[in-house]
Structures are given as structure tokens and as C-alpha cells.
Length: 116
Image (cartoon, rainbow, N blue to C red; front, side):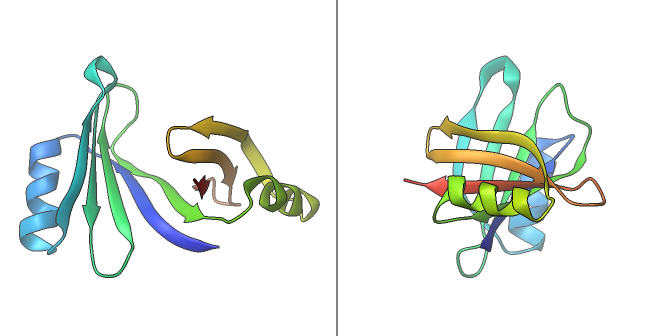
């Protein structure tokens, strides 16, 4: 597994974009308007690692999850279950592939993504 992105929930999208681009040196990769569900901006740093910032009416600002790329989501989830990992969302299809969530002992969400 390799870390692909970190997801942050933000209170002000424009302020956050300005910080990560002007101060931290990231570039906007893509943006998505989800209507009343919120907005997502993907920011690209060095290499292939990204930051995903989300503003929505539900979640409190802060670290939301760490996203990791996996080659075989079903196999990875099965392996992690056998090692005692807490699966908080079983694999499901999403636009870019398949997604599942696990939780570490500190209740940090880890998104496992198999891209198509």
C-alpha cells in the first residue's frame, strides 16, 4: 500500500486553497461541486501525493482520512480483517474504482482505494 492522499475537512474552501497553493506550494489538480453536499478540491504536491480538501455541511473541520492505493481491494480487506483490522465500510464501487474504509486504533479513518 502507498499513501495517495490525505483528506481534510475545511471551514472555508477559498482560504484553504489559498493557503495550500500560495503558502505550501501545491497546485490545483481538480475541483468538484457537489451542490448542497459540498465541494471538493484536489491539490497536487511533489510526486504523486495529493491533499483532498472538502467543505460540506456535515463534517467538522480537521483530518478526515488518509487515502491509500491498493492493487486488490477485496484481497487487501480480507487480509486486514484476518489481522484484526476494524473495517468501517466494506468495499463498494465508486466513480474511480472501489473503496473501503478501515480505522486505526486512534480512530483515524483510512480509505483503501483500488483505481480502475
